[in-house]
Image (cartoon, rainbow, N blue to C red; front, side, top):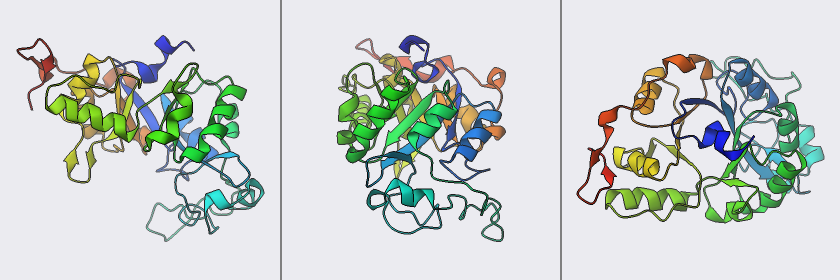
Length: 281
């Protein structure tokens, strides 16, 4: 899949991306959630990767095991063999804890290798949670010849140091996002040109991240912006109309089909005196 055809890198795409799979219907970051998302026709998955005590890349969000499994302790302190014994469906509930429909059904914490093998054509946004996971992620992508369909991002910039050069596709770190956001709001050139896309929340604490200025600055760089976590179809439609490319959602089945996703409004930006396109707030 050549870089130019990867939907995750297309600013004009209107994508539905399964946030940890279809995580409203099945336990997050598991093969069950990814299978359900694929059945619902998503354009890609977003997932989180950590590393075990014995150096294996595993797909799990939290540093601790308690929230999503029946185990306890740190992922980083657990060898893969121990993780294999845990029930990754034990805590999943859709009714506030009255029932646990995935408990005891053999759902496990998957390795990144297993996800890449199970979905050999699916585009992925891979969030590397800690710098220590980089080598294991890099090796898995190379083993599966998956570098052209996977964008690697992280919150700490140090967690994507291994993905700066081809054949890897590097998304944004928190530092890249901050640089673009700040640059867009003081009308200066961005220093975040070396990342290929931005995956951001609508808000970070009290800060509105997806302002019109931020979205227009990314578009000037031909960098798509993917937004998490959006489960309301009306909010998704509004974000697409404002220029967002991808919607990361727990409920991909609730999102409109491709033909009903709005293109950006032409009125979202206006020309600034210096020739740049600065949007109206």
